[in-house]
Image (cartoon, rainbow, N blue to C red; front, top):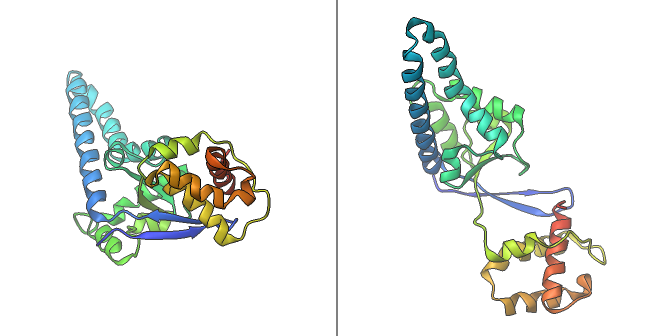
Length: 227
């Protein structure tokens, strides 16, 4: 299945594009996390093995933590990313594009007991192939999806330094989407082209040149609810 893009709209009418991850990158991320788990369990077995039978109980607790708490804690603490997902530039988010919460992280990972049935994550794979955004059963129940993390560009760093600014006049939904699209794609444009486009929007920025570019980036932050 090819990766697809899901569009969701904020209450302000801004379209957010969520590039859904397909089964292949998700499987590779899982394989990396599985390797990390095996290393952790091997280290625990060597340490608790020195304790003899007394260390068996501690090892079982460690086994539970590594297999079940590892993904929940990573996704809850690190913005929806386990080490495997971070290596593949993937992230778990809510279906509306919001950051994943602790409850959703718990539900989607506990549902792996169903996704693994009858063997080899067969249920999860079938669900991912049938769902237009590659969601396994755990994602459907938890209201989450796995997306590709956009690559950071120099212009994105420039926009990140711009304070959120409200537009000087109300913007139609299409105009709001155009402003957000400008901020997202500025890295693909030359500085001269960015200034040229920002000058067109001077009616809402009351500025020209590089100052207009910065103010347009600030308006994009304001539309997305960033501070």
